Image (cartoon, rainbow, N blue to C red):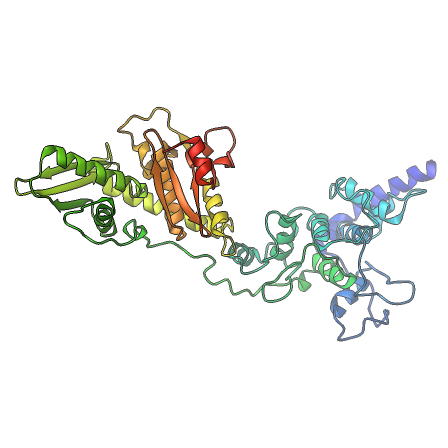
Length: 475
């Protein structure tokens, strides 16, 4: 017991007295590689890294005089190498730190794991796995935490942010990949550059001793780190310049619509022209007929609720000329500004989700629509205080003030879908309005309002079949 206590005190003394020098000057190569491993000669793959691993005292190779660059690595071996790297950085020697955790009856891998646990590098996530082949994702997890936080500069931060968000690089890693943040950290700090034109990481593949040597030596030697030269170009397709008028398919002006389809043609012509007035011509026009025309036209305009129009007024003359003027209750002369602000905000949301990689080119329309559904629900609350004239009935209020009722929810959501080129419209009954969209060739109903009605997002109202939608709100 006394010998154990003395060894612990000695190890503690080393940790207290040496790290400052090691951390300030960086690890030092104390050996010279001159072909000690028969399978690692000048020109060999990973030669520079394996040689550095030897010179830093992090490996002595295998018993047969080889290094085995193509051999697989167990979790335990990866832990041993990482522990040595941390100890080298903190004390100047790869064995000083782990030495205090030796004990009778425990394997070398367990000893080094105990050291990393005591240092706060690892928890229990690798317990029971030391003898199993290590995946590249597991190694990324260990290496990303090996050195103290903030030690490694993020030399590739911008390139990785843009390249990953655009899905042009690291294409096999998503937010669902185990340890994906740690994988990205290896790229950001120059410890990995991936493979192939897309710089894939192959997170589920086992790792070789040569690949591990490359990452380890970049960890301890700044001169070996990689500066990524990625052509990120425009990292995402910006929606800048899109107008509300451009979100409407062009229509044909019909002066005297004889049915709903013809009325829709005229309304679409008006909206696609960026106007809010429509003049029609009817012989023998009466007040009752004028009201019927108004109601029919307004019902169609509401199917384009992203346009922020929800009221209509009209004037007509004795010769049958009827002019419809569309607006939004209480918007008044500010309507043009509200529409512009709503459009600008929708573009900003679109671009931000693309920039962050939440939406990318590899996603299906359904996946993109779900991402926008999530954004709407996360960034809006239902306005229970809204009146019939409240701005919460239009998309502007959702984007700018974060509050809306069903037509505001639906208008904002449809605006985002249309920025993605997704065909959609609004469908309503006497009390409610929601989205009907075509996603990957299939018509679905989407109700963002009801999806946001609880403490958590309810995806039951996303991509409903027409039958499911009818069962919850018939029209």
